[in-house]
Length: 398
Image (cartoon, rainbow, N blue to C red; front, top):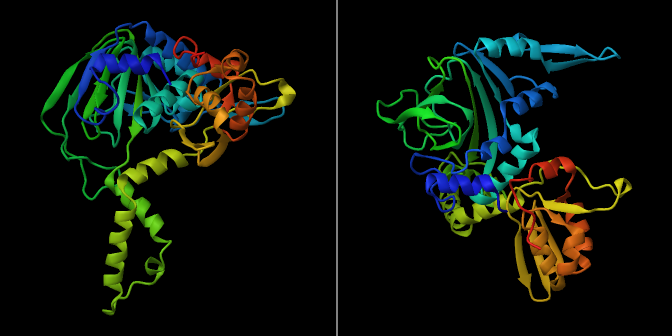
């Protein structure tokens, strides 16, 4: 999958691929700052909030550095049948934003096709699960207090300006569920300055940071934070514990009276570690990820015209003599070798127009597309989903 924002982030940070993710702090600027308008604008964010029944903590509002009670910006809309639906109250929200406030929408990728496609592109790039949170701040609103995140983040400033302070770590590789608290920020300031439209910043896990518009006067700031939930050695051990249940020795009660069970457990654990490496864990995680939400294909709506691969990670395509295996979304699909050109096209991550593709790879692409769609590896390219690719990701090469 080729996406303009992904390549622009790489260029801005001087990266070649995702390997620097989680390494050192990095900052740069997009060569074409106008790209940000295609990602998200303040009005689009507010429109998202207006048209959906959201709730706290997915949609939150802050003023003077404190989180407001949901009643300050939510109200119950009553339908003609007397049903009550919790909705953002745009009049109240507008008043707060004029005064100076910050609104936060977590997991914007579940509500907006552009955010969905960007996150999918970043997942294919990084081989990690990604979600995006959007932060809109107005006038002189204060930001969150100095804090650290338990995941790596890429921040893209989409509109306006915001002042940031980034410090180093006070505990190496801290975790959300950890063996020790991590409450004291270090004195070392890695970077302090203003993020302007088109600026990009990578803050590794555990780095303390804060952002604010306090003292900036009238104006606004919109930035997105893409969070990368990378796996750790502790994650691998948790995965091994699930596999341990296959062996009888691990299912027996622990012997607290000094029997021989301890040595048998130790030997079995060593075998398990040798048989299932961290690389095996990461590969299994990619291949077993379930299919994301998507619009199902219903032929009663009309013929299938365009499709796109929607898996969280790139499907694995492997030739096996006269057959081809596709592993994705927790499934293994087997095709005849003649389907390989169609599979490579359909699983590229870019939209495929079947009518155009038929001339290139043959009529069987329609049948292959139907199978992949039925198995939830691909999805029909609805106009709404197509809008998430328009101007940001090209069609599959035909």
